Image 1 (cartoon, rainbow, N blue to C red):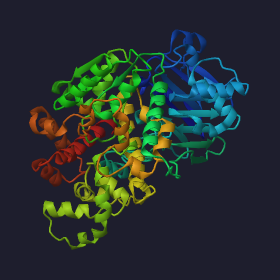
Image 2: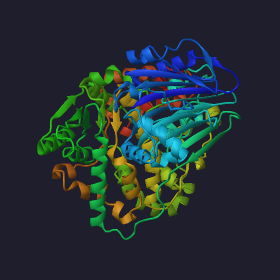
Image 3: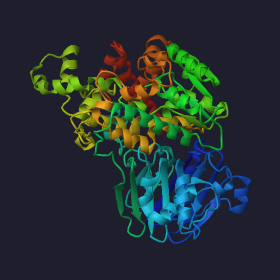
Length: 630
């Protein structure tokens, strides 16, 4: 787990100050080591940095000011092969292929054995070297073989290619900027902004989708010209002509296993999840499990015990989370593991509130508990944390999935919205409901962000008129059944939202989150099952619940679904410091003339539900974001 950055200046060599500052901006992602590589496009040279280990400094000179066309930067968080043999940027034996890699390839030992059988030899025990040899053998066809999470930047001087790639689910982020002069990329946008070619500008299309979906939908970001490389894709850049080609190497299986029985499906999911947990427990540093008290994380913890007897777990406790803490403790007692409860006070949440939200690089709609979880893990010596994230998307865990069948039948009456002429709050609600024409609209409605009409009203007229409000280009397959919603949950709710927030939250404190529910085999198998086994419209996660019955107490199985975040509405309504804080920032925001001040005041003075608080918080976090990056 690391941080990567780099650039290719097509027309002229530029100063290495760029890569030094870009790498410094993501120091939090990898405090254990750093490295650099620069090239004129035909030959390259490796360098150490001020934060490199003593042995690396003995091996490579410290990068000072020099000029180059290509530069790679790397920050290391040592997880597997803690020796200097895992140092990056890593070069092939002939020094014509150079790689920086952020993530983990869980099946690298299996691939390594395959390569050894083909005659390859290895100098290290790292998965990075396996990637290099895989590229030498299979080229870009290697990506489909990797089970794990990764963002990769690879330079092939022989083929005069630069390749950027991202894992299937987008668990590791990778952003890039390209114009006629330069290509710049990094694990975090704050690194890209340090390059001399980049001047931050607001992408209002990205802000608009952020307000509607709680996140900016890939490939866009809230920064003009900066894009998120989409999951399961790779970008190839021709170094000679500076042309680019984006290709996707994987998609969900189209064919369904219609002859599978429920008993067979439960047994197979149980087996695949066990294999994934076992594989993801591998690390050369301490591993812990993060339990919220719900089915997803407690099941992962229970399945870890047979493979790692000394596994322990922790739970973050905050206001209104008593039942989650109680259930997590119940499971810990049942399987006899050490369980730590970290109580987070209101003051702790407020203490670093602005700094934590600004770290996200875009507006946000809630208070993030994962920052506190990551800080706790780091303070207790854990670099690797198992997470239950991904189960809700993979197994139909969200409450909106239970509303799908009703919407599919009610959408036949969407014409009634044209006959609603009153403008009271109930009429607006009804009109909004009957404006969900396709699956993207239904998915958007479930994300608890602003509604399209609200966004239209709150933006200033000139800005709103510049926004592309037609989101047809964001549509996926639009299958009119659960499969259609499943794709939106996996590609947008998970890839663009949850794991993006996970990565930034974890890496702020140099911690790696791992996701046993998101192994290649488990995703392939579950997504190929017939709908009747995965989704029934009555109960969330019906298939996973059947698996969990074998491992978890009834109290956990019967606990209602809850989100894993701090109670935002409670803070806004009851905490004077928060209210003052919000009013101060809304006042600042109104002066910028981006938004309608009258509408902002109306929203603030008419907070009737938790949803109304979310709209306010989206505007406040926009102001935080703007202050930080502009």
